[in-house]
Length: 311
Ligand code: 13P
Ligand code: SF4
Image (cartoon, rainbow, N blue to C red; front, top):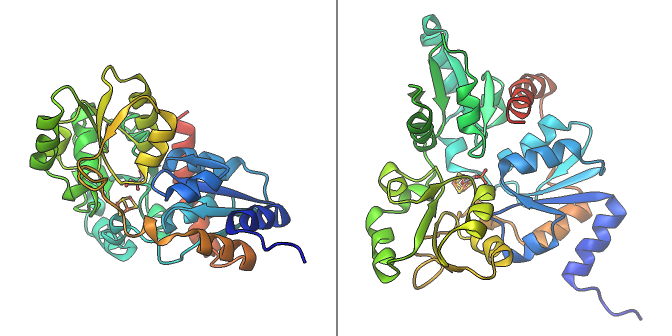
């Protein structure tokens, strides 16, 4: 009798049978990242999802990311390991609330920019989408004669305003992981490593961003850390990032405090995905992302505009 396959071999075997591609966000656990065909940030993953010729996209990330893959590549079967992998930013901006707000403020003729961390129904109400990797570029290309409404992340929005000098009205949403980091906790780590440089995600609060030497998307963190002029680097974001960084920057001392949870913390949604659930979603081709075609089409236009404008 042949020996039982271990779970990693099972996943690779199923991937071959299904002609699937495994896309993983930088916040996934190390074992998932190591099995993926591509690991990256929301922007890189959207490009990968659009260009793949696989029949099945297995999206190891959170729901809005898998939904984005379906929007830009509707002919594919898109599955995700855990259908409950949500996002606090997505929850902070329900489509009905945004629709009502836009109706009440119809006279303002807002140009609506949505951070990609939102539902397909919200994307369908917007002019253009952005990610943390291209938000500055997208805002710079907004029509100069229209007021901008930026949804749903007030921290990313505030950072983009600082970078571009463009005023925007901000939806009051935030990422529950990144707003937990405090200036004091980062200061304490810095006291232990006075020469350390700090890199933070723009979803952090302004108090934390002001302490950072660099503020950028998860993918840009990789390049920045590789080239940083110090060996000691404090990384302020979700803890999955450390796996990617330790692999890509083996010579750097990536400091996350006495445990990996001091400057970095887990996103409970990202961490719902496991190797077992990854295997099962490949075996069952479920849970599957399905979308109303009218909403998908309306969400596709601002996403394609983003891909075009961020080239
Ligand atoms: P990135 O696009 O920078 O990877 O960010 C995604 C995210 O969810 C951050 O919390
Ligand atoms: Fe959403 Fe924050 Fe988790 Fe990113 S880290 S998926 S923004 S809850």
